[in-house]
Amino acid sequence: MRVKNLIQIYTGDGRGKTTAALGLALRAIGAGKKVAMVQFMKKGIYSEHRAIEKYRLPILIESFGIGYYKIMNDKHTKAEHQRAAQKALNRAKELIKKGKYDIIILDEINVAVGFGLVDVNELISILTANGAGRKSEIILTGRRAHPRLKKLADLVTEMKNVKHPFDKGIIARKGIEY
Figure 1 (cartoon, rainbow, N blue to C red):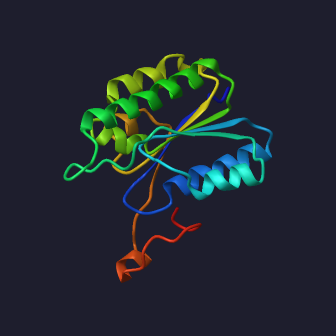
Figure 2 (figure 1 turned 135 degrees about the vertical axis):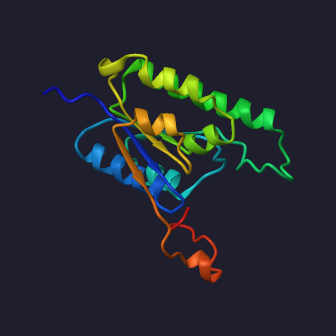
């Protein structure tokens, strides 16, 4: 049986979705695969950016966010967030179409879909455009994956929050949560 390039989803309210995707990226480059990560909704330089640069890891990482989208009291309009998310989606589409990368991670895409910043129908169209002939394994991360995406995916991992330091008032720590 010929194994096609699969669609994987890391979702759920627990921590570790992006971390799991980055672990897969590390394993993939160790096996000689080419990896790209398109970050939706994330703005700035995170520890993964620093590590990729510092250790010259062969991972393309691009962020297109203008900051996390907040429905209330956001300094940006929903339309501004939608434009940023659309730029990320267009870049993802370009990378998928070119077929240069073995693994393409669409980080926080599930959240972007959930907030209506990315149209789920457009995303599904991109993911299914070449069918079994698609050259890249696609990883979708973020909370609340859309049911249609879960149905389409070959693998869905749901992170469940059982216990977290945040519950005790411990804020996110650099190098651990971001």
